[in-house]
Image (cartoon, rainbow, N blue to C red; front, side):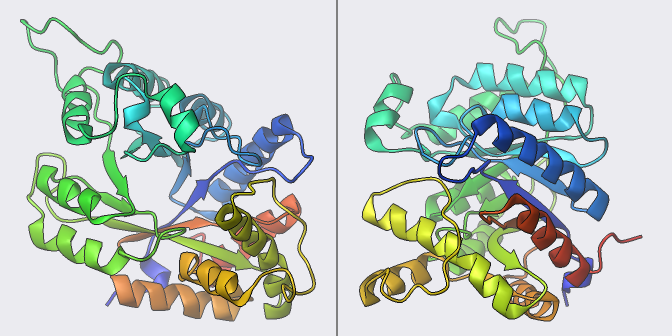
Length: 334
């Protein structure tokens, strides 16, 4: 039986900032959070890729990975994920190979196929790719990390011969089939799209084919969390996440909003249900409720690892949230 006390916890950072906030400060906040996470015993610190989204500054994922790795010592640093159709595979291999050379044994490469943006920006990003050939691009990228062959004309320098863990990220069944077929660990984006979570995990585990990289299935589940000293305070802080989701549903993207006393009157019943569906895995509360909620997700998914997203309007509250989560999980662990 898997328990919260023995399940690795990691952090996914979208590098958010409040409405009217400073992007440079968002980067400094991420640095502070990564150092905090390392002290608390979190396993990984992954950075998302998003473009042209107000309130989210994670457009240059690899650059931020280097910034975080340079300002920490032990925690693994990764992409959650690089949206591969936005990039040439060899460029990604070279960039990640550079990071792995600088910070050996600490770099993860999570790959997704979504654009991480709106359709117009997607066209600006993807001049030569639609994402339909994602599986071929993944295979090409992985091949650049293999030991170079004498007759190999195109090599990733640096990158060739480096052992970089490659994860497949997804929010649909397609990603489950692919991760299983190529024998790679699988991370599901249930922090914002939980609908297919359980079916996707079943497919991945049933179809998994062992590879040189991975002998058995390995699953990481995305979970939105807001923790505070009391359940009531956490519920109050969580309204900022509700407002963000509501804005996305309305096509009105903006920076993080300050929490409100009540959501009553701010959304319709239909919008409330839509936000609840999008955030079905959300765990909100004090230490006891957090422990219960995360354990319930582990029970339901049998996840090997949880990757958490805790976004609050106030950066000090975010640090406290991750601290309370860590305490609920018995971290740091020996």
